[in-house]
Amino acid sequence: MAECCFRPHERLRDFNQYQQVKRAGKRVRTPHFGVNFLTNGLPHHRLGLIVQKRFWNAVNRNRIKRRVREWFRLHKETIPLPGKDIVIIARQGAERLSSTEVTRELIRVFAKQDGRSS
Image (cartoon, rainbow, N blue to C red; front, side, top):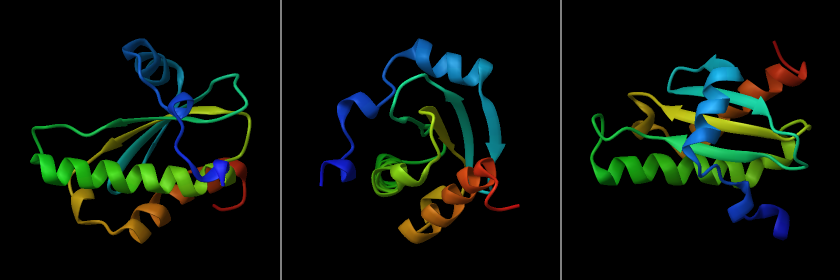
């Protein structure tokens, strides 16, 4: 059961960590998200979210964050190792996605990186 939790050590918290991923990481764009990721040298993945105030009110920002965190919590074991720092940037239209659509969109990013999909 512990594998299905979003633990404090799995969160990016520091501005410098976000900047490092942005500067040195790989970038992938999906229709509703920008995804930056960088190998972190840890045995686990870490997640950071950017959901800008200028596009959404608090209700929609929190909805987006909840759905992305839920995706990470349930699918972090399917993201290939080594551990990665992942920064997900929400783009306009993300507030209309269901949890299933968020999962479908984000899982493709890491399936491509693993060579399982094209």
